[in-house]
Image 1 (cartoon, rainbow, N blue to C red):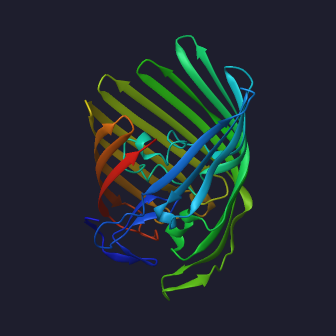
Image 2: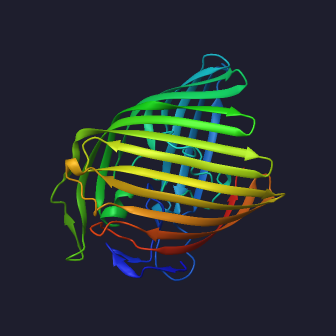
Image 3: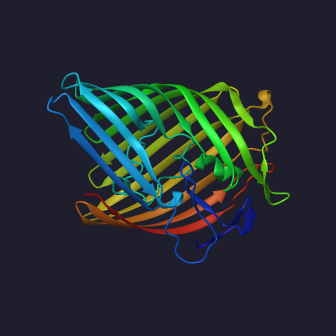
Length: 352
């Protein structure tokens, strides 16, 4: 941590930088190197059965931000109807965003960590079924995916960021439904996705900043009526010669909430042999729904600018160094306000 706003926020000493909201991966004001927030060890494999139409895929991940606990992220079966269409059932990532499926595989990312303003929500997996289809539309390659399912998260890491590290919030998404379609041609790629779900949260306890203690929630059921949210995402990428342009835009319409979410990212990468250099800007802001009681001065908002340099050591490993500069832009009434932060990260990624 190079610097930022020095202050207590909930039960943390800041400056603080949240690298992954969903996994509660936070760099704070501790001196020296912090290995936990972004470190991961994972294993993924697929078993093909004698019938070539059937297979089972599993993925387990251990994260430093979760004290080395081993989590089952994927466990799904695949049945291939034909060369173009397959049905999958079990546990998978919710394919909301462009890098959702590969977000734990550092080597697959052009950054040391995903842009936090765009990635990291209270639920990232689901249990259910999906149908995948690939096709050729004239000179365009097309991939489409439809899904349905549900998910339950006990002691959500996402809500610890907002209610304290010792707090506990359980989350349920029911009736998850949606899909995405990707179109690619030559150097251009576009991906559109839509996900809807009924959301419920049980806030068991949270940090009381006034008394500096953990207290039972005065409102144990938040969004407990199964309110529906609708998620819209669009990503547009250009990969032309040695230049790569990456963009993505997200909007969440929360029907029973007092605010809606908007997030975006844009990055430019230059390839130079075994080296890459890139800049990225990510932004998040909540927009008050005044008619529902939302406070325009009480909304979360922050931006992050990053510079990343990457060196490929082999076709399966790399080194990255990244400088992040996060700026707090939340409203005057917004809490918890983490403030500004400047973070330097060094990453070694390897796949095998």
